[in-house]
Length: 396
Image 1 (cartoon, rainbow, N blue to C red):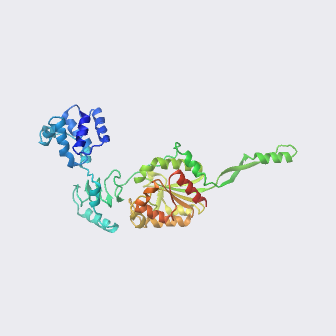
Image 2 (cartoon, rainbow, N blue to C red; image 1 turned 90 degrees about the horizontal axis):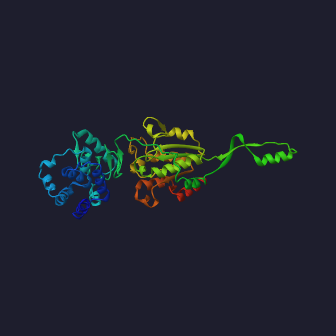
């Protein structure tokens, strides 16, 4: 019966996916419907209906398959009084637009207009709004709010990114540090990183130099003459800047593999985190990024110009974050991101940007094209071939 219900919904034009059907089956298995048809009606509607425009179709199919309960619910009988979880209701209210409908939603017209209008809305709005196109609210096409859609907007009160169109996020967000203990999949990355090597012997002489010991002993008429040398290690110095959070959540596993490999390959390594673009401060620990910021000027004054500079990020952001003061998605930056990037490149002439997004998609994002120009086309895909090319660039 359940599979018949699934196929009849699809035949009626309700866009039910297999994943949603399996979610319903899992909910039934856990006893959420409590063996009552009324409970199953609301449970299945919450799982299978994504758009309120399909509720009528759902009711008709449900009434046909389960003998009339849909009409009873629609008529307002006792069935309609059910204590639904608030989270289900909120999800049901979210608006899902087609690509054609998205194309009809217009942006306000630039950074200055967006910020000016937000200030007006904050001053004028007195209550909660849902589904609209003007006020700060939810599930609509307004530039301000959560769980809706707008080509350029300010995210307010939304748990996670959906369309990745926000030019600024009003809420305080928490990120996690990358795990540097990941080993699976790092072998090929390590091989590529080894192109960036410059061996030297520095420090205390604590290793036996066997060839020199043999020569010295032979020249000393057989009396043992031990010769020691300092440990041989990779003398290359690396500054690693890692984009974290937001759209980079899709690439955490790959970045952890890279981070783990870099930590073992370079003795002189310093790493910092940033979000989307480098600004006036960076941080070492994502758990304390709001309390323990490190001024970017301090980084530039601490590490000399012989360090190799590596950025890791998908370069996907609002162009305002690169070109405008105040354009950062999370805070008000006094100077544009491109200013800080150019300062870093003027100090560290050997620099590359590693992008985990497949290279064929780079041209679709304006911010990626902007960063490519700022990096003088030294942006490479985060693949084995891309790493190999990046290490060759840094070795020049």
